[in-house]
Amino acid sequence: MKDSQIYRDIVYSQSGMKLDIYKPVETITSLPVIVFIHGGAWRVGDKESVSFGLPYNEMVEQGYAFVSINYRLSDEATFPAQIHDCKAAIRWIRAHAKEYNIDSERIGAWGPSAGGHLAALLGTSDGIRDLEGDGGNPQYSSSVQAVCDFYGPTDLIRMSELKGELDKESPESLMIGGPLLENAEKVSRANPITYITGNSPPFLIVHGEKDVVVPPDQSQILYDALLKANIEAELQIIPEAIHGFNGISAEQLDEIKQMVSGFFNRYLK
Image (cartoon, rainbow, N blue to C red; front, side, top):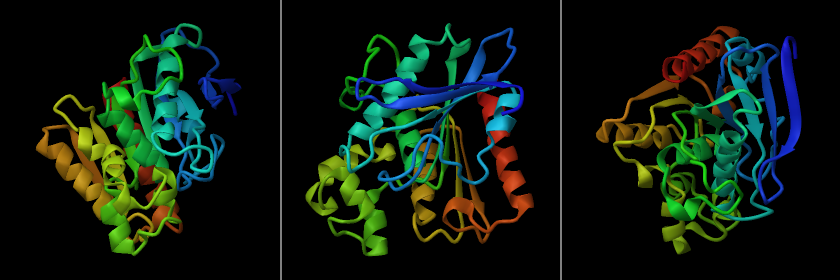
């Protein structure tokens, strides 16, 4: 990557998860940071996954540290292991902020699909004890100051009923650790909407109009719940776009990138 420093495969959690850090070569002041959480139905993917032309370069050039994290997949551990890892990553960043010249009070979370779900859950569940886990650095906060959610699930039962995927082999059931209807309490714990308060951070939610993998109503109900709690939130539905924003024009992709950079610039700079 041009004009950037890259630190790879840093172990951040007692579960052995790793992260990568991308940052400008020369920085005078401490940097705001964007934590990227990859998608893949909670069962595939890794921190080097490149979705929708992931703009590492653009964000680093705009003066951000960009941290891409791994988390335990559903064949390794079931919920809440995934959010435990995400929160451990945020705490690790705060514990090592001086070392990497990062501003520990300006942290944003961003992810697509399953990563969008985890980013949203990070945003709304600050202070929820049983979602913190024991991944290390417990003296630090796992709060984030802004969330960008790309087509992430929220209400897993509602989504699975709509898609006719309530069986135990669905990605949602594999992540939860059993059939959704038999684990309703656990499903509720995995829903970002469950924890929304008036102190939740601002959200940018972006979803494809023709997404059949995660229907757009999943973002709509999250957006409605945030507005009800008087949280600053924006919902952008991309015309004709499917899951992953595959097949959209270069112009549409550029507009989405501008939405994201504009959002983070507004709340983290």
